[in-house]
Length: 365
Image (cartoon, rainbow, N blue to C red; front, side):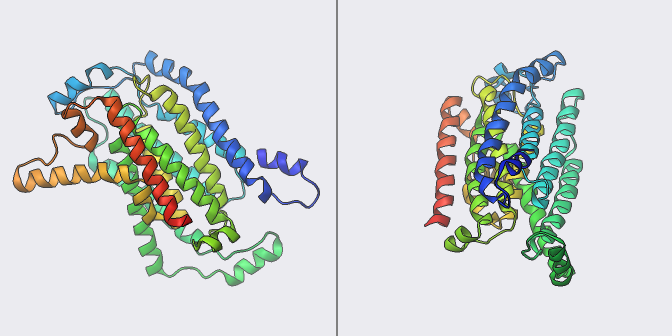
């Protein structure tokens, strides 16, 4: 809608490219405003329906530490997801395949998160079974991986009937082995990222603040990747249409900041899997689309550390019967050592910001 308005106001013959930075800024502002506006209504709605946090961890110490969070409304990811999708649709280019595939990723992972949260809150179980959840994430990730693999092989074209004819002549359909390898790799990254953000979502504002840092860096990289001259100057892959992913990334950052407005300690609402899964999926999707998935491991280093702490803890306990950390994921280890929650969160934010800067530095210098 915004793109249509800008085109209608532009001089005859002027293209939409000069409006990209404006649309990126507008997406961030609109999604933030939408999240802040929707937040109070969503919180009241969740509270009326008694959709609140259950404190039933196997660790009695952890239950005591989080006793004050009991019944705090959860599934706040609902209004985050709504703000992201609305802002991206308003500010993005509707002809962009990458934008629609990114929105599909956010929506699909969001549905899985909603089902998992709803199961957790309405039954005695702790959400979907691990196998069912992994299967759902895998199916969604494989489909997204196929879409990304196909889009990555499209030749660079302009617009118009002649270009469509050229596409039919020049587009080389990828081989089966290329499709399989690319799809499996992309599916692995998507599954890993969704679970990593989910594991990090354990303290007030922790996951949201880290997503803002990583999302800002990836949005900037998407903008640079979509600009032919800048991409060539920085020696990074030039990805056609990546600028629209910067719009989507900005919408994600703005909506997450709006959520943080209510999620900062003491939290008024938690995002739940309805928020952590789509946010983690979007981070991975943008990184994969601009071919910077390896850099995601640095930019999202906090998420990597949280995931590794769980893997090491489980592996050590099964092999030796001993625990490496007082509790995992990593943020709980510091809680068990007596560090105040707000101090843990702020220090993790600082590390996340530094890692995002370091990731950008590897590209810019």
